[in-house]
Image (tube, rainbow, N blue to C red; front, side, top):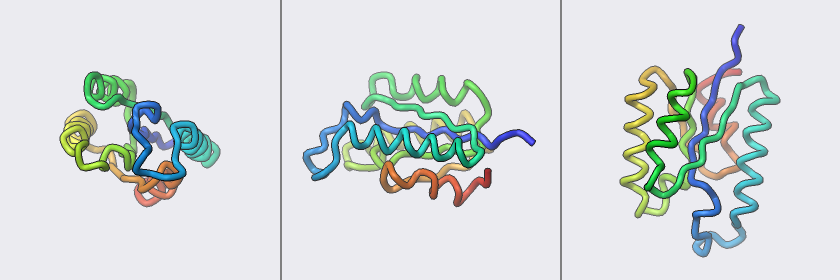
Length: 125
């Protein structure tokens, strides 16, 4: 049986202003992202990460990742939904996933550390 595939789309941590999030840094968020992807792989998923910028190439990068293979589940990172100024980018990415992979389950994490739980709500390994 083929492994279930997961794509995690999120904002490149080095581009985020963490001043509103005490205790978070680009390094810590990167560490959480990498740990969650590795945990998914250890559980039997084929997991990929797609980190995008704040708009210039975000859609093109996400489209390239979505077109690389079939994904059973796409996780949309919390950094795409907040702050409010990212609403338009969030909508563009959601619509891109919907058009490029209409049969794919979409889920949302609430922090960079709970991606595994988000995936497991929709796709078993």
